[in-house]
Image 1 (cartoon, rainbow, N blue to C red):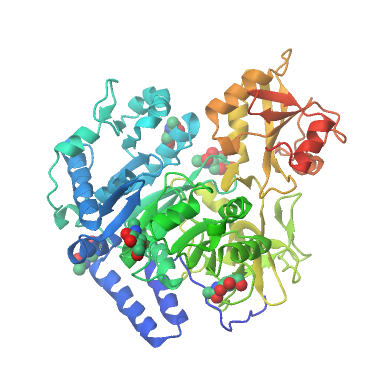
Image 2: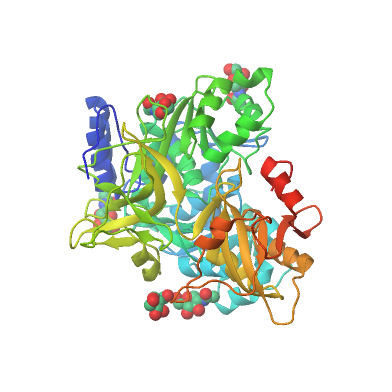
Length: 613
Ligand SMILES: *[C@@H]1O[C@H](CO)[C@@H](O)[C@H](O)[C@H]1NC(C)=O
Ligand SMILES: *[C@@H]1O[C@H](CO)[C@@H](O)[C@H](O)[C@H]1NC(C)=O
Ligand SMILES: *[C@@H]1O[C@H](CO)[C@@H](O)[C@H](O)[C@H]1NC(C)=O
Ligand SMILES: *[C@@H]1O[C@H](CO)[C@@H](O)[C@H](O)[C@H]1NC(C)=O
Ligand SMILES: *[C@@H]1O[C@H](CO)[C@@H](O)[C@H](O)[C@H]1NC(C)=O
């Protein structure tokens, strides 16, 4: 699998265990001063167990009054963040439910408290399991279970979601806190009052005496390719490698960075830990808003923004304004931007440098573009991190193999599956408590007998100049509105609706939209009709908005393989065009709060964009 050009190119391994990633970083930076600084840094981390928390505490000493977090109209300095996280740590200790080495599940959206909770936990040698605040019922229990957490802390506005599973939490003897001053519900304790009463004295280092670079710092959930979310372990060394994305993208100590992505995803979290590494302020938003974006950048003097492809597209779709170029943003760091959006963005909002990176939370590989060509991803030092883009059989959902059973690389320009070799230097840690899922991400005998690769689940394309472009995700996950939707999870939930017997969930392309819109082919229980209002209500109650199927197709029976696996290829190809499909079709109608029949007229309006889905 040919050598790619390395001229002018740097790739950063964000996710390797500390020593290797650091050494590669050292190697990659050609400027010797940077290289030496990084090498010294690596050695310091390894020898002294120097964690992101130690870096934070240094900043509390050296720049106590510098702003650390801006949120709405509040500003928290480094000193204030330290005090608040000390109080969190002491509240946990005094409640007596948490000791060094434990995991505490955090169930809340973006707000400063998220950061104080996590820092507080690290101060007492604990890890946070960062639950997606959109998950409910079965998924919530599953995620809690696979983190091994014995304590759950939830936002006040998520009390209903907690109440729904409370009997199960009690059964498993999980201590439940709610972020409120008081709480009347038996078995749920308030946290804020305990925190307010706790002392703000610094937490002695003895309380985290076992913390090393290999200790868990967080569990981050990924939907991977099938089934329920899986927990990826983020060790302290991985926190460092994630955080080093900012310095390696050129962020400096005078910058101000804007974080609109969920902190429970690695992309959102790394902005915050990266800000600590740089000692700079983070502007935190509870939710991304295209209309507020540039106003926020102006208000807080933001110089660095973070994006995913959808964010850039939403920004480009807002009405033009005279003030479009009036801001101090100089750098954008993120992933998934399309080349046409990239051009629009720069034309409209001015000369903002774009650093595109690629990496899966659980992967053993990551890339960052460092060239001057309009393209997404650029490679690479293949001799150090072997990877290949191989031919993939979408029907069978597995790599195509030649007559001797080995995989084949795609031709230039053709999409294929990205696989990265698993070696001692680029290991794949796998998922917590889920050996089966871990095994599924591994590919054996790819180019020779006995070799082992990590299946990224991503289809990519490499052009003549060795630029990589993201193409699609394969298999059972699709992306919609910037979130991964695990089809099996949606199908499980649909099958709990009264009239639904079985469901086959997949994503369909809609012109003008990124990713795929969710669609479900369902069969009905004997003698029951499709109750469009009840199914809508069920879907609304149990699924986050992005995971709700936009289209529904009623079938007599579902297509299955010889091994009883649902066949998606055919239904995916047929899409949602009522002119081609004789089965009854419906679309999710948010206004009417039901599933409304999808007529040829409605179909035309969806295609033309008159009906927004
Ligand atoms: C780092 O952690 C390891 C394991 O707990 C310990 O043996 C070692 O003494 C620590 N080093 C320092 C400098 O604290
Ligand atoms: C939690 O996991 C254990 C095994 O690890 C299993 O026996 C138990 O049923 C699980 N509970 C839930 C609610 O998933
Ligand atoms: C942004 O910069 C302006 C001018 O330099 C300054 O007056 C203002 O206080 C700054 N705002 C913040 C939030 O730092
Ligand atoms: C990455 O590619 C974009 C698109 O051409 C370019 O604007 C940007 O400067 C590149 N990044 C670096 C570090 O050169
Ligand atoms: C793992 O897979 C095997 C075979 O497919 C199955 O029998 C077993 O129950 C699975 N284990 C778990 C924990 O899911």
